[in-house]
Length: 245
Length: 320
Image 1 (spheres, each protein chain N blue to C red):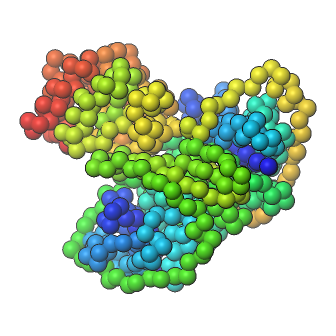
Image 2 (image 1 turned 180 degrees about the horizontal axis):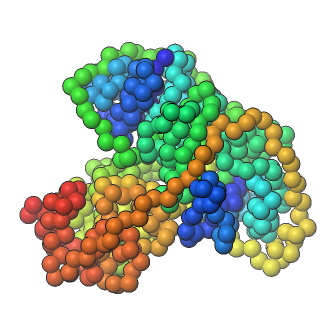
Image 3 (image 1 turned 30 degrees about the horizontal axis):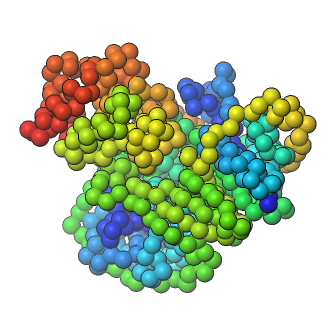
């Protein structure tokens, strides 16, 4: 079985976001880049399936050279090889097109990725890839088990969950609690250095969407503190001042 | 050539977030000199379908094929793509939701559409087609230029306030050819909490964290939520500990919400939690630790013991 895990390289979740060049670029100074947290779940489940079924895992990233530490970490966690499409991943359709092109060449049984990246939060890439390949896409996937070529899946829906079955091949957008995040061990880190990482140039169309500029939210006003012994005042303030109840 | 809006049903009723999407789509139609058509899929009575007119749609295409009774992102995308083709729609509007997410991406793939998710304002058409969206889980905004011929806008909930008028939409049956390939995923079981207010749709949310000390203490959170007609939510550690289901976890890796009021009880306010709730219009923080970082992001704060304060707030709400 062949699994493709698509990962993003994104600012650490605790990063304070700031922009530069007249608000047209993310200010990367001092920012630590990590594997997308949802992608970490996808990779962790792929590694568990590899341990169980002997699957091979290819990790794919659409990103520029500064993504490579994130890709190496995925190799250290258990991916067998990696492909980096050398392009800035700013448009979901463009990213999906790159993934679909690689998938068409290699026919994977499972294409796993996070439910969304934590930068653009579009949550679209898996569905577009599924459409481009003519195979089903399911997201957000909380549980995944395989029984031969049938995938048994639990997906989160609003206010609950749904159990599904579908035949491979599939594209899945993953989230917790599909697997426990994995931390690379020393042996993994050493072997990751020698695992193949192929860099290929992008294919396909121009980007369908581009970002003209960015903006930060206006800061909230100062907090109004209410003494605990008159906590009931809060309800009056929410009713008469904030007018939300 | 009209602006097409996908309006989602919940038990036969147009969801509140879809009413917002219809209103948004109608405004875009006005800006582009065209009309707004809603496509609605699944069982609903004619009066409910026609009520799309209250928010500005002039026409409703109703796809009621029995195969479409259960929400199915892939099949719904086929229906909406067919509706867009019939109406010659170049702009498609919908409200972001679990179903819409599954559908929108397939639709974008089918139509080779430029897509903006988490849209929070009407487009700026002065120089092309630009929309503002929320990115970095609410920590920033992007001004997106949509360059494709077909544009899809997924609207973030609770960011557009619809105005209602006394009007009805004309309703037409719509029966596009469905793809067998769209029905290969079989749904075995659905577990949905009933009777509760759906968290992503809620105007008011009461949320609690580890400060509640255990799942057995959630009664005081539920009492306040019930008095306010609010949904309940929780922080990540609470869902990780299985005190509450994952479907209540709000934060960076959980549900992102943008209610009018978010009351956080016994939650310190880690940046990952804030990322999921910072679009709330009013934030109230109740915590016994005066140094909890959440107070810096709150509109109202109380330093105190949630076990003492929540029951008193519930009584005060009941007395309103």
